[in-house]
Length: 279
Image (cartoon, rainbow, N blue to C red; front, side, top):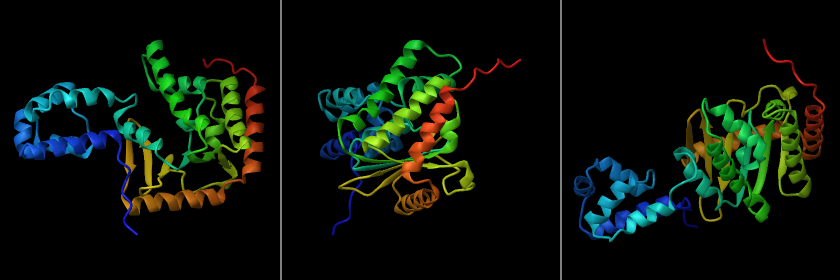
């Protein structure tokens, strides 16, 4: 059997075409960088799909390669709705055959309701514009729509009890959010497990985790921190993430018990008494 390749994202295809056109023009990366007025390293990043050129750089690339605005026009279609460190993950998840999510302190974005997502975005920003938040929420909900449109990808959701009890957006928002997840599991669209507080230490307690499997490529793993994210394709690292997920899944409650727990916590949120303001 041949070695599976990592599925190419649109930006990786852009980079591959840039390399083909550069080689066809008999230019080295160094020569092209001089014409574009940037470093050879940046050209290397463009060709690997790790970064996209600015519109100005794309225009200079077109002039250098005599491609008639090709790379400027294609760049317009690649303008991501997501932050740079997550943009590639958002592209790849639509190609995945299986997705495994772990939510540590937050419900994973793919499963969020609109009010929950808005509360998260508000908390991340000191000064925000309502229209800007509207755009962020719409983009997040569009990602989640792929779960309603198709039976693929297969989705596993492993949620720490902390993500269920943290009252993001208030009691009613949390109740709605948790019931949505429980309903998805009951409908068969989601395989759902909860890691209760009673489990204590477990293999994923240090980080949220997002894993993607593909029909024609090796699996990938993604972890995210404050203002940063790391998409891993190194087989050893991905295997270690898979092992940690499997270990944590072994400590989790069965699906039926997990659904019951989530519904009970949703009811607790809904019946919660208003908290007095802090003084």
